[in-house]
Length: 230
Length: 191
Image 1 (cartoon, rainbow over the protein chains, first blue to last red):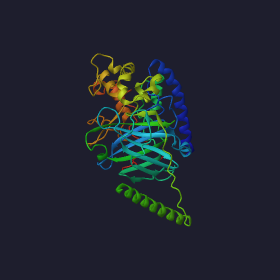
Image 2 (cartoon, helix red, strand yellow; image 1 turned 30 degrees about the vertical axis):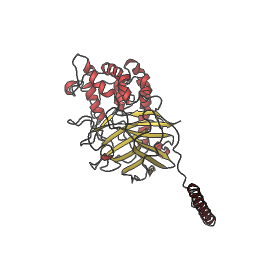
Image 3 (cartoon, rainbow over the protein chains, first blue to last red; image 1 turned 30 degrees about the horizontal axis):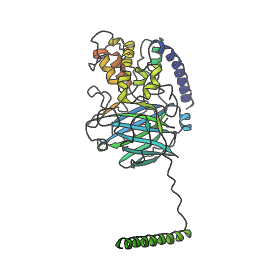
Image 4 (tube, each protein chain N blue to C red; image 1 turned 135 degrees about the horizontal axis):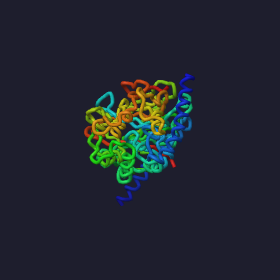
């Protein structure tokens, strides 16, 4: 366990160094992999409670349903995971465009309150775009946030399956070697590579939705947003 | 006259209900009042800070000074605001688009590829296989096990047949460090 912690600390130190190097190289090569998927992707959210690390959307184990996953707060060591929590001022909003204009027709909102994650929707939002209210007229579901080290607490409510809590970061990439390439210390990736995100956790929100709630056939456009209470 | 009678009746009914309500209210004084069900506070305005559709788009294609702006530009406005920046950064980054007519393995040249990516939404099929890319299906979702970074490296560096710049087009990390679950919540337990 200590070894793993040391390894993670070492990785984080390397990553901090690489961020410096990347900052320099970014002057020459306009912005490259700062950090993979969406982890610490931009200065305003970097490392904070509203920093989205990843977004997934896929067909569930039942082909009648689809699953949305939003992860926030990346690169958490086990110790950091046990110390962190969802931020009650941060709303996570899944956006679903069913008409092809890239404007949301439906949202599923997730907001933590007192150890529970509340879900609203899917529902048509009162306003689209950058500013949101919590859509309390939408169907409300809630689940206890799973504590670190506990089995996943799952709830089925209003046709949704819902979960919120720490999970292993599902993202994988040899980010360290990529940094070496960008820094000019290497000309390519190693084979095999090394997963820089191994052994780290994220705070995860998972919701499984019947396809019939979203339109049942065709393609929808989806994205996730984090929004902070003013 | 008839109207007056009606009003009287209504007043009488209202008085009876008021009295009835008072009576039951008095009864309540002698019983234990149930605890107040305190509804959490969901009021207020929530303003956007971060957003994400496809993996690594902001990190790869948006210049450092514009990353925050990209996160607060609605997807419907991203193409107009960012496509030319995406294209310039892609061409600066990868030699695979250096010559006229160069495309990636999807047959997309630099302008078309970045035109697709600049609107940062994740397409999700409701009709079957959902994957970022599995050799057959393209951009029908993003599954946990999808090796999205290698797919993106291949589309950025790999050229028309995935054969160009081989040392840059695969990070050789092909799977997660913990197996995913077959059922909800699908993600592996925390370390």
